[in-house]
Length: 280
Image 1 (cartoon, rainbow, N blue to C red):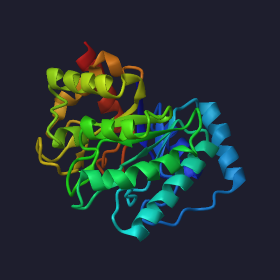
Image 2: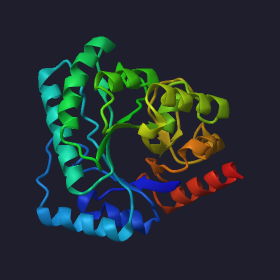
Image 3: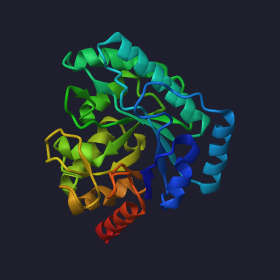
């Protein structure tokens, strides 16, 4: 298992910040997470990233903008979401990233079927910009506000609707699963969820994990990440990490950190210790 973190600094600085904290995988934003505007990355910056990434040998994930909603009924939001996703994938391909992690979005009360009719053509456009190395990875959602993708069943419907596209995969988040009612700290429950993934989609499509403790209760549908060991999953997160079918994956921290500035070396140390204890 490769223990990594979401690192600030974008294409210019995220790799070095990950290396400083001892990360074995790095996730980053290719744009500001607070605005729709996508930057015009300088070719020199993209080349420098590729060179540094080759030096470090780290798997790299790009996380798409949280504002993206591929199920949006509003035409303006929908258009900006598709445009942003296309730009994100193109940037990810240009830095040889291993995947673009994204949240499908919310139908905002229109219903799953109506949302699906928006999501499928949007993702078809985005997938056309992926390549053999850079995949598109659907992340399971926490489930509040009409979100799509809170269950393996919903993700599988999207997967099938896109013809089981060869570059479409998954990233599973421990906090989102927990608040959606899947107790990832319970070995039978976690094993059953992975079996469902294998049966409906295929475990070969599971390309990454997000390891986050949860501030909100089981089944609450509230997306509230907590630092490792401080939340309600607590040591049960070791079960999430220890299953034999996920040992080859990069696992990325998206926790607030003690200072509110995100993952750091201490959180990575706690994650590694938890994995070691669970494995023994």
